[in-house]
Image: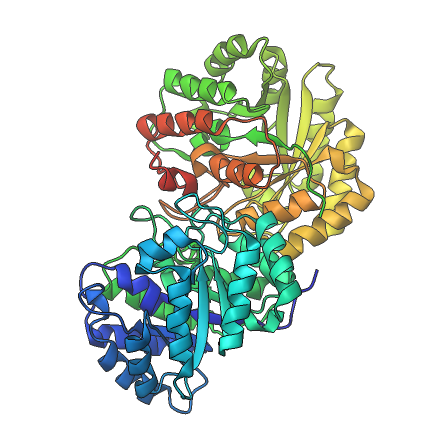
Length: 299
Length: 299
């Protein structure tokens, strides 16, 4: 057992959770929810994505969200992240002065093609171009389907390791291993993290795990005992490609906080503050809140 | 890591799940669901309880359920269990020829008093009387609130150990540690199982864990790595005192099977068979199915 004093939480609901909500969430509501999350003490928060509104209309207000939230976060601890699918989006994010951008490449060729219509090689060529731009914004490389592919393609751990290495060589400041379809189990998480961390400094690694099959916190527990200190989650459990309304995708931030806090691991995040954000999500966002803690405490 | 080739699953939905359902479930529907679970290959199944119908009207048909299911289970692997709250119920269960009875004592005095209006000492006095009856039926002692009490009472692990020892001395064939309010976390589960198994042969121990706060499978994973081989769960995730409709109480059998199977641990239980039972529960029982796997596979 290897439990740390503290871990970092990356709140992704405003991007990963909101992007699949059909009804447009008013910009001022998004901003209000993000402010609640910042006030709760989250260190990292993914607030939007610079994608073409034709593909993700929900994120059409990225510029307005970033402008307002940047002002609010000034002097506070929160570091702001935006997802970017390509160099065009990255340049916008750099110009807006985000702290981080997330760039996603899938470890499955078939999933990468389906997701962003590129080969893994083409994705890395674009990442290389992005990294060549001189900027203060740091880069997170998210490796999607690192624990399994929805199209049955084998994802060798060696490929995950190669992609992580390549990302770091290009200058990424963090590598996030994502269980995109929520299929990972504790034995596999232990095995993959053990293997990857033999080749990659574990301080550079984070995980994005899903609770799709109820193993989200089991996998989180294994990851933290294996040395991971950087965990993504979504307030209310929104997002993460749930299969059906009411089904889980992303691990809910409040469920993850509760486990860490109950084990004596600090997160720096205030549970009541996250509950306030969840309450606002329930009120303003047309997507079911699916977390365990929200049900227990009737949030 | 200490993963076994196989674990045993104890299906408790027909007792723990059904007992809190307000609308009476027709006896023939209960029996049909139980038969599906038996056909799926579950080794142990708690099918009813011999409680006074004034307190739990849902279990008023215990005799009929047992008679029919006993006939069906003949020659099959399943061992049949009934819960009994007292000697009166135990004698009925012995007469009916159940394989096992479950007798519950809470490790929290205040919870035991609230639950069955007895002190722990009084509960053990009754258990002693029950054990004095000569019978082929074996006895499971379930220690409720072994991981925490809903009324804030401290539950020292030494008391849990003493109760387990006392149960075994009286002749119990299995001790089940129950996380009655779903408050256990992985660190605590590891700590308690380590301490208890220093004093009690671990083959005599089982666990009944809840998924109330999303840690059900995390705790299950820790328990199996610590040497537990006997796990209770409920098809569809019914029961286990959920706080609100749609909230989790008991770990769903299908979620637990999926984790074990995906880690290469056999259960002897066929997932499709459990899905058939869950499908029937959805059709016949007025209580929401809350498992992750049922949502993923649209059962």
